[in-house]
Amino acid sequence: MTEKKTMNYPATGTLHAPADSEVLLRGVLVYGEGEPADVLVRAGVIAEIAAAGALSTEGETLDLPGQVLLPGLVDMHVHLREPGREDTETIASGSAAAARGGFTAVFTMANTDPVTDNPAIAEMVWMKGQQTNLCDVHPVGSITKGLAGKDLTEFGMMAASEAKVRMFSDDGKCVADPQLMRRAVEYSKGLDVLLAQHCEEPRLTEGAVAHEGETAARLGLRGWPRVAEEAIVIRDALLARDYGGRLHICHASTEGTVELLRWAKEHDIPLSAEVTPHHLVLTDEKLETYDGNFRVNPPLREHADTLALRQALIDGTLDCVATDHAPHGSEEKCCEFDKARPGMLGLETSLALIARLFVTDVPAGQEPQNWRFVAKVMSERPAEIVKLPGHGRPVAVGEPANLCVVDTGRAWTAHGADFASKASNTPYEGEDLPVKVSTTLLRGRITCRDGEAVTD
Ligand SMILES: [Zn+2]
Image (tube, rainbow, N blue to C red; front, side, top):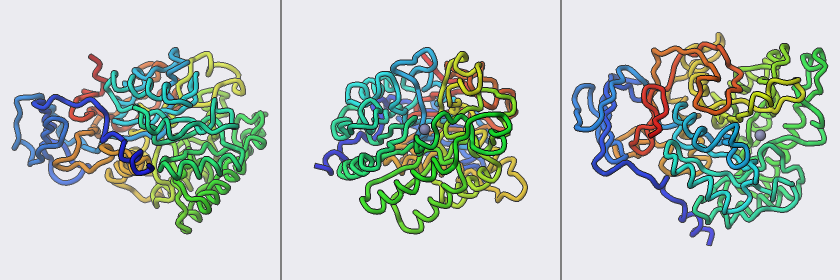
């Protein structure tokens, strides 16, 4: 029965480029390496790769000289706010933001209204994503009914639905009850689905709005201590050790979490973890202005935490980057800091931030990485962790044409108002970024052209 449910997953999304369609990507650097190449995509598949200038097509040719061709990005953690808060984001606007960010698949969290705790909501989300056809939008099912932390949802029914739910999370809230989490682990194991934990011991974060440290003390903000995250990380690592399953840690934010993950991996515990761009590049010093755009959960930490997180991503202790894209209306952000809703936009800035931090503008003392590293942490590993076929595959002949192209000569300035997202709550407003996604292809169909989402 378990095997049947696993086999039941679709190879990939349902919509494909027409059989005779061709797109030629001219002059690209595959993974940013070697000589410029032409890559011909036919019927949604990479059909040929040859030296630049060697291939031609009756279809569309995109001249992308010296731009970096990567597999389409995969984001395990976004909030697209539909159903319930379509005023801040919809599946359509979030898909457009994803396409502009280079993503071909995203997983949208269950904390919508109503909650994605049953097959009907999951199928609605999946189908709206397929109708929009800019990105595969996979619904995450909630672990507990109504995110109430009391009763488990029917993982099996959601996994077997049209949406083929393969990841479950109460994200936004922690599954704090250890016995309930143990049952969830045992249940998930039989279905081979992933459980993603928002690690936050709620008794330790009551009223907390900022990282517990010097900055919060000076600003008079209630502190969110590291132990609130780390206590759940180690508890869940031990549950995974004793009961198996596949557990994933959402938005790791502290040096201590890194140490615990390192221990867990040394002991072959089946645990993966993600980190957000904002926890890699921003610190709680940003809170000095009381700007609500810097409120996020878990909170921005200290410089030492960012250094530990960066090193952990480099050495594989942290598996991947996820944006935790969290749109909010301006009235939810432009208010007193402790009333601002936690969360930041991420889809349209993440590739540029990760490329800047690890490839193009590496801080002194940090080991530079190449574009294959970016492909690994933003595409290959997330697809592997979720067991998502068709995405995160090598850029090679015969592979599905889920691709993104990065223009390394195109610096730009982030402005929330320019984003495809309905919301504009970016913590990077006015910041100069060195590279931009120019092109995204979803199964051979162009979803982002010259930096803009293709909506027809
Ligand atoms: Zn979360």
